[in-house]
Length: 287
Image (tube, helix red, strand yellow):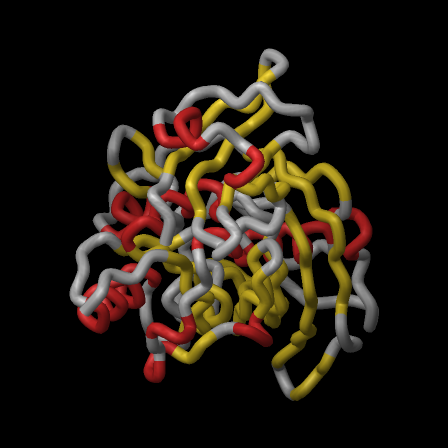
């Protein structure tokens, strides 16, 4: 089998970890060079970008793309994991209007990562401390940008349950479970999520995501098509020796970042503009 190079936009199902998805791709395409661009919780579903072979070189750039989520919140109870799978920790009365103040979180948002997260302290992930019953190390809050946060339907009150659904678009690093708790705290109560569904990572949406159980080579996104934010410069207009040896390119500036491809769409290099030239970020040998 000819090695595949590129990115898969995979619809991750509930019940699998992001690492489980990576292992599935490794087995399916018989290669170890596989990775993902941003963890999605086991109980979350939706867009997971997975790089294979040379595609793993693109994951750093995809990982920092903005994210779009839909999620459901159950108000009144906080769990240790901040989702519906955790153990209840505390409860507070729920006295909420039908529509909550989501606009308070739009713009700059300071968020402290939850205890059950993959943030590392002293080489150990926070959720490992939590699962072992050890004290959770203090982690400084992260500054995020929330570009859009909306409630998609009015509060539902059924028996002892109060729930609502939301959508949020934000910079990389957002923990939706913690946002739900912070939103509840803003209204004087507690909460946990009962579903999280990632709708998009950068330009890649759930509408074009491939089911994991039918994943095939035809679902692969080519290297040259995986970074739409990079301007295109064609190899024919450059000195091929400069590209082959990874030299800086002294060409007119078209944008902060460019990708060099040939007429067939093979990717040969990623560059960024600095000191009046395009200097290489990552080099490739085509698809």
